[in-house]
Length: 379
Image 1: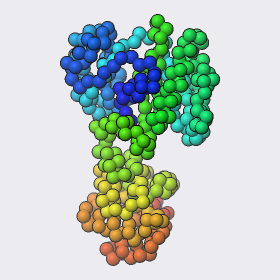
Image 2: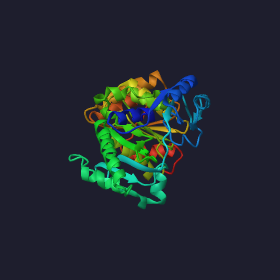
Image 3: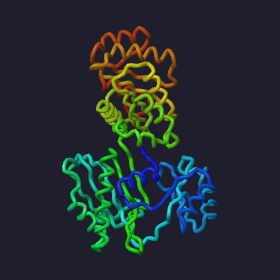
Image 4: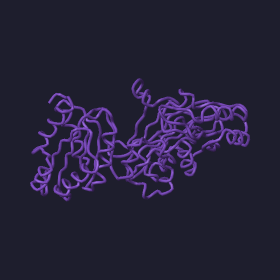
């Protein structure tokens, strides 16, 4: 789950990270009030789940409360990469002498968190990684031991050689890691972490993504979810407990189990096709879930065929077949459907489908080849 910058700032502030004063508003007059209370120069920032806000005109500096109000009026309602700005954050604008990047991600290669720091803060870290990777220092962290004081000092020393700055940055690095772990985040970053002319360190931007599977432990963070930042497909999938990722192909995938879903997509590519999505319906044969899955898949105009690939372990294939028939009778599909059911009670499942005029593939290769061919791929 993505959270807004102001929400990430709140989490970091609660962990002791130095964050400039800020407030989020949805009315230009309120932006003026906040700017008056903060005093001096402020920054007005659009709060949407997308990058490139500054380039799109969603980040403006204001020298006066009146200017802050004008900027808020211009930014509120703005469309940034398909998302409408409904809130803006008004924050104290810190003078910047130097700026750095500090962030943590979960790394599949090391099977744990990796801390990344760079002296090239304030810009897209992906650009730095692509063009000047030597400017990024990466440090894998033992998830059991956690981040040590010595490691934090090492990371800080890669950003600045001034002892007084390292002495301020190292504690921030530790506090960011603590926020990452305690929030069950998959990403936490400050970009930029700045040093002001008076030598103070500030986190002037923050970003955090939270593991959806851990939200039951964090009801306060779960309440931060902004449905307006989700597509209709993602919202439906989340509400029905489906795992869904949209892709760019034309073969819609409806599979039970993440591993089988990945294998199915690999096989579609192998036979010359392109998967349109990752969609794991889990262990349910519920007609409602199947209908929702099909609705999500067919909402993509690029989809030309749906491949339903089910392995019946605990979930019985005959239950899936009956649920499928019920779902199709309630809501017929507008695109062809290729079915492969294997596992518990698969023979009975094929009989059920045959009784309703539906064929089912014997093997996964057969099903995938047929789906790719129907989608116009090279089978």
